[in-house]
Length: 412
Image (cartoon, rainbow, N blue to C red; front, side, top):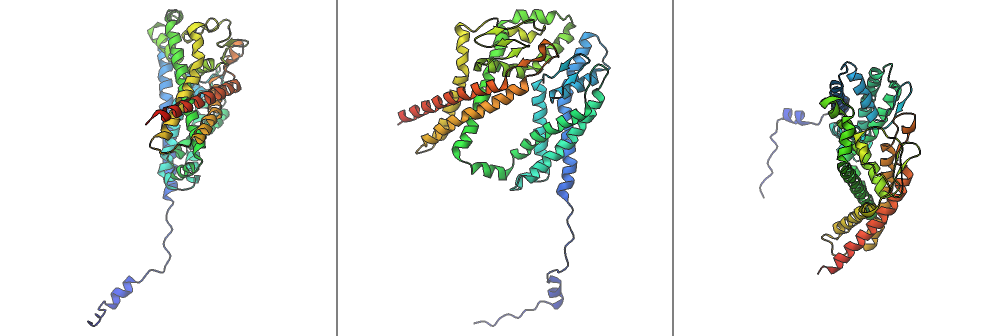
């Protein structure tokens, strides 16, 4: 055996390589600094992206009507706040009908702001949801401040807007939506969702798909009805005599309320219907309306109960739920040697309450009023829409799952 090699390392080198015993300097809170910069910038960007289309619309309408463009900025702020749920109050009227197109745009940008703020501090790499909640709060605070500033500038002798209410409403709106955005890429949340029972996850997913299909059917039905009444809608639009730019502005205003009409038409297909004023009802079984405002989009309202081909439209929500149930069965059967059909049936039945809750929420936010008189009640009754949706989706999803089972049995 060879003799051991002696250690020839100099003593000075050994002393320099010894571990350090003094405490390390405290690290600066880099994540907190990034959040304080990223969150306000993301909130301001979200507000700007959702406000600029509204401002362009108001300027277009002012140019078409020949009025002064000076108050256009204040009116744009008022409409932007209305899109977040802040009502506009005049000396004799109160407007609370929220244009859901503006709401959807604002929610999309705020969700992205929450996602960016969460990534700035690495919230997606944490197992707890506390950093994501902190990121959402950091976005909501400056957004609430922007709401207070917008409410202060939007106040005029003709339109009364409460800055305090604007700040609280926009802050709560941003907190809820930014939390969803910050949690979208959260790894720990995905692990917790994956640990949930499979039927529960399938029920939520199927309910969401069914609601999206029902809303798509409502939007398509409203578009077809308006197209069939095209000449009447054109006459109503021409009655304003606001010029090309003014008519374009009125058309864009109608498009801002297009998501509301999609929800209302979906409520019509489901059965409960909706109201276009106090004491009115538009449903497949009965149509009771009075004098309506001269809005081109209202030309597509039915004139009587559904008969013939129109009566078959009430089966559309069940067919949409059937498609959602069939997609559920197809997704679970793909690549599986054995399928837990009892779990699929539980998920299909559970998708009904999920869809009912979502549709009730959509019906709630789609309604409102355009004054304090007869048009103070517009839209469907949310709890009725929720009950009808829960029943239709549960039945349709169960049928779709059964169809999937039959197709599965016929496969070799």
